[in-house]
Image (tube, rainbow, N blue to C red):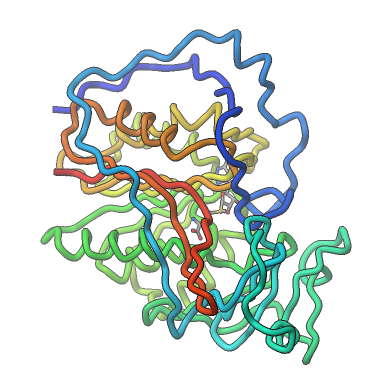
Amino acid sequence: MKPPREKRRDARPRPNAAGRDRRRSGDAAPSHGLGSAPAATRPNPEAAQAVKPRARRSGTLPAETVPLILEVTPNEDYALLDSGSGEKLERYGPYRIVRPEGQAIWARALPEADWNDVDAIFTGDTDEEGMGRWRFPKAVLGETWPMRHDGIDYLGRFTSFRHVGVFPEQASHWSQMDALIRGAGRQVRVLNLFGYTGIASLVAARAGAEVTHVDASKKAIGWARENQEVARLGDRPIRWICEDAKKFAEREERRGSRYDIVLLDPPAYGRGPKGEVWQLFEDLPDMVDLARSILTDRPLAVVLTAYSIRASFFAIHALMRDSFAGMGGRVESGELVIREKAAGRALSTSLFSRWVGA
Ligand SMILES: C[S@@+](CC[C@H](N)C(=O)[O-])C[C@H]1O[C@@H](n2cnc3c(N)ncnc32)[C@H](O)[C@@H]1O
């Protein structure tokens, strides 16, 4: 039995002093990649001292697996070819792309000639939106190109915040979700919050789930819908919703709308369509609690990924275990990494924590 969710309006900004600073793509660009985060939205460490602690959920904590390192290895759709000197060289479908990578503090393994033989380089040297921040050494490329993940076609995309419309390390979560949906033997409902270009939504829909995809950005929703067509999954039940993720989840809670799987991939800072402010350290505890409240009676998983935050995965692990107290199951936490082809080094991309039902 799930205890009822208490109204918790006292979420406080969490001190974010400990640990490392993981950026989704290695620089100061906002992690959501679709707009800039005003300074006023950043957590105020002094304010963090003042607010009273949240109430805990009661009950036995779920079992735990920690640390768990989930790894993506080179494949025909995507490969991290080499990395080093603050940059990474990747292959996305047909294109070789160079982007900054703050974590690549080691030396490159491949010769200069390989690093020069590329189709696109993120320069970030203008303030303009979109393609202006990319250089195309061989031929000027269009904004999008055909990509594929595990047989699902979609579009790669040169965006102004160096992102390319997909985060390949998330494939570790996608394959687990695919297996959970197919193995459930019943209709599964998936809620993808902060869903971006929708690859996770497409994976879930192909596996047979009914999907609700929520993102604050009209542009991202447009890209995701386009991907649904490109993937030839237009007949699959995906609801595309442009809304603030937290507001939407709160409404679902009130309406009694329930899901078997909830995906949470929030940025460190973001804005809802009506200017609602999302600050991960402040809003995540409520968001995770909400995710628990909108689970069905036979829930399968809640998967949280966090990029660009100064924290250890132990922090989100503790949050998830506390939030799922009394629910049984297991919380697994660690890092999503990409194994590099040239010298076999693992590039850490993000922290994750996921609760999986018993
Ligand atoms: C980095 S993306 C998520 C990536 C995606 N899940 C994937 O793995 O490909 C974060 C997304 O959060 C969205 N976002 C930011 N603030 C939001 C908010 N308050 N409510 C809903 N979505 C928001 C952004 O528009 C962006 O698409």
